[in-house]
Amino acid sequence: MPQSDKHRFGMQLAHISRGWRAELDRRLAGLGLSQARWLVLLHLARFGESETPTQRELAQSVGVEGPTLARLLDSLEAQGLVRRLAVPEDRRAKKILLCEAAKPLIGKIETIATQLREELFVGIDEEQMRICQKVHAQILSNLERH
Image 1 (cartoon, rainbow, N blue to C red):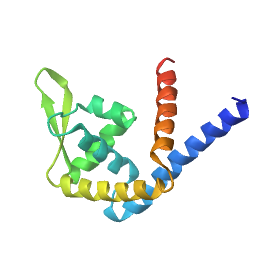
Image 2: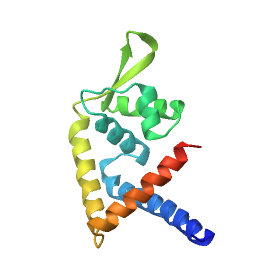
Image 3: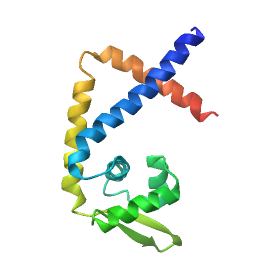
Image 4: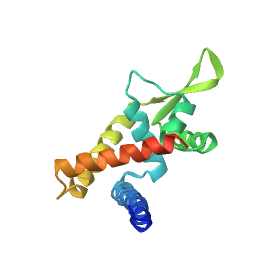
């Protein structure tokens, strides 16, 4: 594959990622959450109720540094959306729990995100999606080796 195609692919991927997030952020603006906050809530919700992550695990999942997540959690905690619990085995660690008040909000976020996904995948068939996912999986695998 020519270098120009690889460059164009990388630029397109970055543009899609930024554009997708920006559009979702625009649609979620009415919920009173910044992109960083709704992203933390979504990641936390995806852990599931039986899998309460530590602050460190949540930071890794979201892709932010610990101090950045700590500030976000401070504001989410002040809003009554999350709660930190001490981990008995490790005094420095904290488990992060979603509060009941966050669940309807996460439902709204999920509904809006699902609607956007449906709109963005118009005109893409199953075979195209399968090939695209295979390409992305290989790129991710190559990244993990570095």
